[in-house]
Length: 154
Image 1 (cartoon, rainbow, N blue to C red):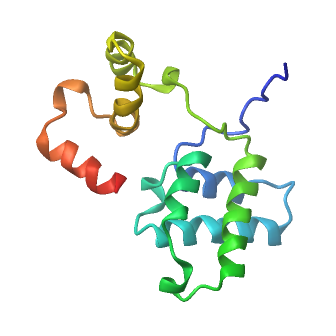
Image 2: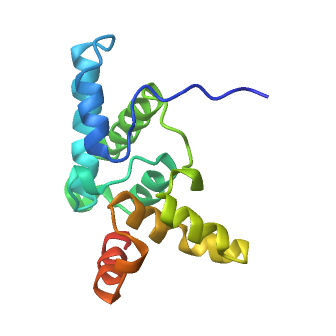
Image 3: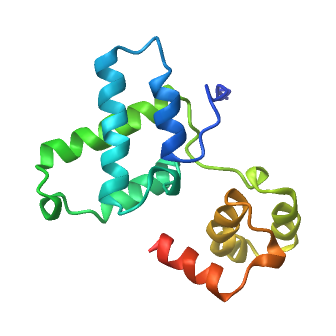
């Protein structure tokens, strides 16, 4: 069994990826430019700010699968390069493929562990991860915050 290497930096959102890549002295200036451009373009295609886009490879793949490059006047080749450069940046920074529930805020982790069914854990994990990552405590979750999450997740 292979042991996963530790991430080079704590990366939660694409804004963190941009900051870390910008400081990566072992990458060429051109490579840094391409990866940063890909992250910024990805956020623009998803209609979000860099700090609102989670740097989770599987989530990025799903989000970008819903994007049609022609709508944004991007060639299929450029779109493929954006996805490739973004993946290369995540791989360089050793961002794990999936986030573990241990990444949750302790309050959220306690509630997550109390959920009785695996399917319920799966269905609520995105909301819990979102709230945990944005400093929203369980007691503060209400209709407006869950609606805001729903808009961001869509």
